[in-house]
Image (cartoon, rainbow, N blue to C red):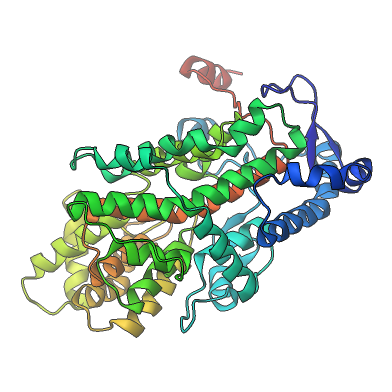
Length: 482
């Protein structure tokens, strides 16, 4: 999919015109061989060439659909915008295009049309493991194909090769005061890596619009390779006096990240880390971190600028802090029980008293889902297998039975069922990752996979700069008088 017509600086004074990939490839056939090395200037490895070819093949397949929708059905309504939606954060308004995933109210998130249960079953796992590897989900999000084990192995090797972080970035992070929040440090680290952006260099050199996605892919693979090392560095600086654990290229992307954190060297901790990173990799395009990354990227800011902005959005209490708030609520509930064995009757009364006091119960409900979050259920199955007698997990299990009926009885809750955050912190805590202020950084490592995949496809589809129309209260009031 190739966008033409928008100006180089992102304005869109004329309609976007799309040329199909067959036509594009035919036009370039005479010079393709000569330009290939320059075009893939930093992608000489066979696995990146394979990845690019698969992305191109999918784009070729999607081009007629995109052209048809834009040219023939551009004025077809897909919903309505109300005053309530305008004032209420545009919740549910269908106005974003995100190819990588779609959130179904009854089935949960689907990665390229696959449910998370299907991803768990079909994505390659680490040797001896059962969890679908998150880096395999990156391949899926980019290509709409389940990778082979050989492809994931090669991709892991490529990500390790791209993981180098310049010494000046480490010095910046190492010299920050220890009380600077880990998410602040992560956004600073990503911005410090930005001078190495291949997209930025190519853009300044005058690269063609049709090649934007290739340079975006380069940055995306580099960022994904670097973010575990950067995040682990921050963790060890803040919580372990700067005593670092070296990266191990023999490990998979997620397993190596778990190893560098250094809180637990068991295979189970690596597996739960893989699980968390895979489950949180993408959640369509409307959540704060994904939308912020896409919005900034629509201005042709490179992936480092774009995802640093997304990370700042993820740091907000209403987005990325939910899992630690749920964990704290479980701990407070455990203390309140004062040694009592949790039962449905006891937790029902506790939940009723909590609501009656004007407080909320975190970890239940979801803005889109209308059933139990599949991510919660997958984590619950993992916990039931690996640590069924853990006190916090047992408490969470009773909450799963007791709290939804209480919330449902209020008549105010559309979805009373637990979401992914209700159990994520419990899983981390079980294996010694008890530093709750760091949990959002783990989220950010995971969400990088979906956000950069969206950036690649946004550039490939030639999506324009975002510019929705804003309203004033007076202008909205005028609509009520028409």
